[in-house]
Amino acid sequence: MSDDVLKTLEDKIDQLIGLCAQLNLENQALKQENLNFQQERRDLIAKNDLARARVEATLQRLRSMEAAS
Image (cartoon, rainbow, N blue to C red):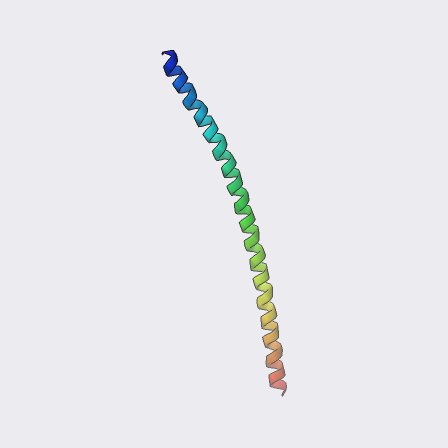
């Protein structure tokens, strides 16, 4: 193999190594973002459940008050 072919191959390998490193960083960032979204979803579900329980309790009190009168 000539020196030019080896240099070209070496440059392409270096580019691939850089791309792999970049993709690994991006993958880690996306995994963290996904974890954050999952936590946010769990928090929103919990808040929604709490709000639903409060509304149901308020409706029950109103029904009780209506039935008592």
